[in-house]
Length: 187
Image (cartoon, rainbow, N blue to C red; front, side, top):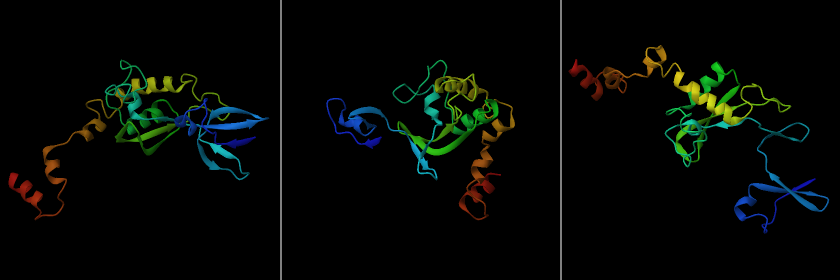
């Protein structure tokens, strides 16, 4: 089996050529998607990363489908962030996950993505409740609004609130600076 880059023909446009490889099998070509290669093992074979990526835009009700939302708007949640998604996956759903500092190409201003192990090595789902990525995203969107950082009255929610004195003193740590004079003069 030889992997070669295909020559553009009537079967493939130039934009799809970079995403596909041709595999020569006894004279004819079989087209298939190029897998993501993460590392080479000791025996020279490639180990492929089989985890799924979840970007916050996938489950954001504020995004349109063109902006990257992948589930229905009535099932999506308002403005999720990567840490809330990670907490839901680890603490509520008990699925192994990892955050990465990558941005969704359609929303570069919101950094972060979560990579989730959805299936075992043999291809069976880790959790029977979430056989697909879509089912997992719908469950994450259902649980993110119940995250402790969003529920009023919890300590995590109180950490998010900003007091006026915190705004004045957060930029100054030494007396004599401009912000310290304003803070001292105000009190």
